[in-house]
Image (spheres, rainbow, N blue to C red):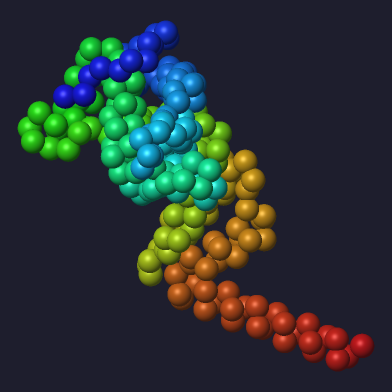
Amino acid sequence: MTTKTETEIKFKPLMNLTDANLVNQWWQNIKNVTRKHKVTDIDNEGKKVHMGNLFLLLKTRVFVDEDGDLPDGDDEIYYNGKEWSETLTIQMESELWGICYAAMGDTLRNRMSEKYDKEDSGGEPPMGTELMRFIQTKKQLIDPRAQERKAKADRDEHLATSMPPGTTSEQMHEWCDKASSLNDKCQTPMPEHELIEATIAAFPDDVIEKIEAKTEHASAHEDYDTAQT
């Protein structure tokens, strides 16, 4: 079991994952530690080569991208165009795990070890980025960008759920109210005309047909009135 690290932890250990503010503070502390943690490798000539810092692991394998998607977790690490070797990557994954392990309280440490550290039972050495990706889901509760992504995802998921045939007027009103409420939770809500279009598209087919028929009827009257002028 990988439990030791040469890095001294100078901040309060994380005791649980229930307080998003404490998780976020711990997360920032871990980021700061990894930024200061230099990484070196040995080249073919036996010389030490600087390969960046441990923060590269987080940046490549943990942080969400611009689209809000999580990395695969096995992404290759590069520093100034040079790729980390497999041996170095595994070593740094274990080092990151050790830092996180040292920065957790006993109860949480044991829980996370049971979940991610399978080395004692014949598994692979624990990966620090796997643990950090899990903890990231807890700290995102207070991340404004994550909140916006979730708000938009909730709204879009609702809009993509079409109303089934036989939906009553009351149920349609509830559906529309929910769509409007979810849209209001977004920092950059969908424009009203787009929301209306998306809402109409979700109506039952028979309702859409009635709307189209009324629209065509109104358009015909408008064309007739125009022709009379």
